Each structure stands twice: as structure tokens, then as C-alpha cells.
Amino acid sequence: MSTNKYTIKLYWEQMKKYKTSFFLALFSIPIAALFISTLLPYFFSQAIGGLSSKDESSVILNLALATIIGIVGTALNLVGFQMLTRHEGSVRASLSDATFKQVIEKAVRFFVNE
Image (tube, rainbow, N blue to C red; front, side, top):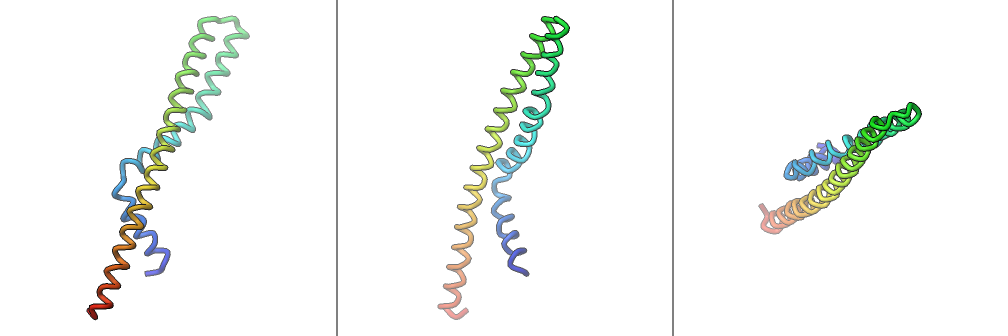
């Protein structure tokens, strides 16, 4: 097995222990980006359009929706990056422990002549 494949195999084994944080980060960051990059400007543009047509109820509704979408998008972004940071820290610690364990086992086998 090549070094790259072996490295990815080791990483994947440790990553599978922390599936929740991985999938939470995997889904919340792109959804947050969609909220902030597409829905938020859309509702702001609708509010501005309501200003030009002097439709007060449309302006208030669109600004309220934009506020909610902005808050939800920011919260999803925060949760996603927090989970990603925790996930990487946990995987790195597990990877270090697993690698150290393998090195020690090989050293013991060498000195015991197995």
C-alpha cells in the first residue's frame, strides 16, 4: 500500500469515530452560505422594491424575513465552524494516539524478536 493511501486509511479510521461533528459541519456550513449569500440579498432586494412601490407591509415582512435569515445563517455558520474545529482537534488527537500505539507495538515486537 502506498504512503498516501495508508495515510488516508489511518485518517479515515479516526474520522469515523466523530461522525456527528463531521456531518454537522458538512451540512451546516454550506446551508449557512446559501442563506447568507442568496436568501439574505433576495429579501433585502424585495424590501427595497417594496419601498419604491410604497408597500409598507411588504417592506416590513421582507425586512423581518431578512433578519431571521441573517440570524439563522450566522448561527449555522458558527455551529458549523465550531464543529469543524472540534472535529479536527479530536481526529488529530486520536490519530496521534493511534500512531503512537502502532509505533510502540512495532518496537515491542522488535525487541522481543517476534
